[in-house]
Length: 202
Image (cartoon, rainbow, N blue to C red):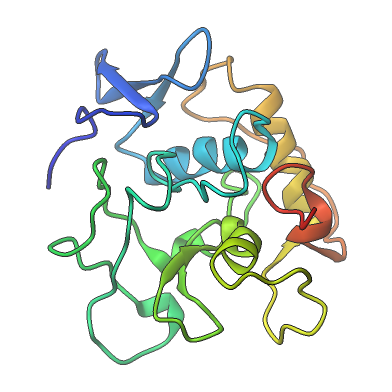
């Protein structure tokens, strides 16, 4: 598996120590512990949700934040549930590949709030997309002006959004074991209603 040192217009830059890589999207650069894939998905997910410098049309990659046209993903041709799907790294084009468990990435918890993961487009266009950028895919690939009549719109719980906002606000504070205050589950919000830059149809 290639390392995250491979760079381009994406997020990860030089390697520091103890499997840490610096996020080039952050200033000052933020070290990311790449041995814990949840930290990578979480940090990048916070960029996707709250970084106004990213555009809806780019549909950033959840592993490196490069645009969709650079980072394309394909699943291995196996039957099973969405949680059991595995990335085919021989055909996928992400320049910063990182193995992760899809089932674990789909679950939000106190210490790992991000649920951004890969799914096949519900409109059966055969494209694999990140759930945090699904609304952008609908808008720019399928040319939809609204998701009102779409049968599948990925939902992000309000509690997850609050926790991810904390991740974004505290991104300059590096901690290998961050703990978040527990709250009662809250109603889910459509991504298209929850985020001002990437998730919304405008």
